[in-house]
Length: 175
Image (tube, rainbow, N blue to C red; front, side, top):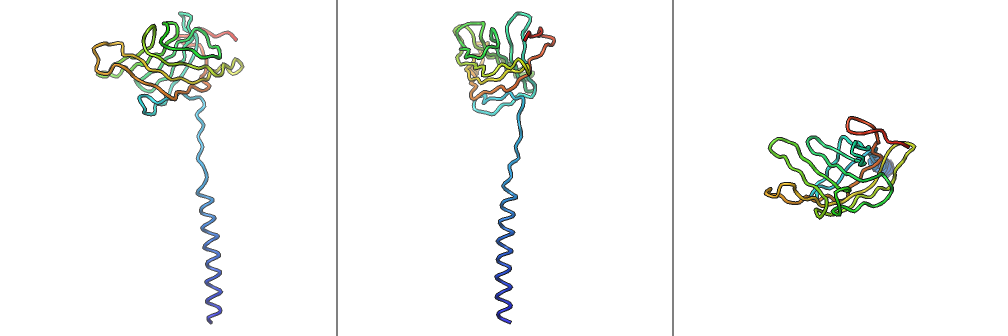
């Protein structure tokens, strides 16, 4: 009887270890979500992800990349969608603008000639798929000089495969 109990306990240990290992392997799967396209950044060190994004040439001739989340919008203006680094705070042709249009919390922060700093790096301009990708970081200045918050910081920003499309504000982009 003792032999039977010992053998039973040893078999149960094997089954227990096998089930434990099986549960461990099953629980280690990753739930991967692809953000394709994506527009996201850290806004004053708080994660911000746009839900709507677009890019194109505005009727004024500048190339625009924008992402928005509800009442908030981040908009980049560059002269052309070339793969290079655009420095912010130097002139008004290359700039970044953040707007909040929520009633009671309206605010606009911008870069421009002598205002703010940072960069927009276009890493890919895909004419076959008509998308644009890149990174950004910038500090923008409040357009209202009497506002309590005077600057806003954006870091670790990414725009990925943003579709370039004509629309109400855009003219068609030639390939």
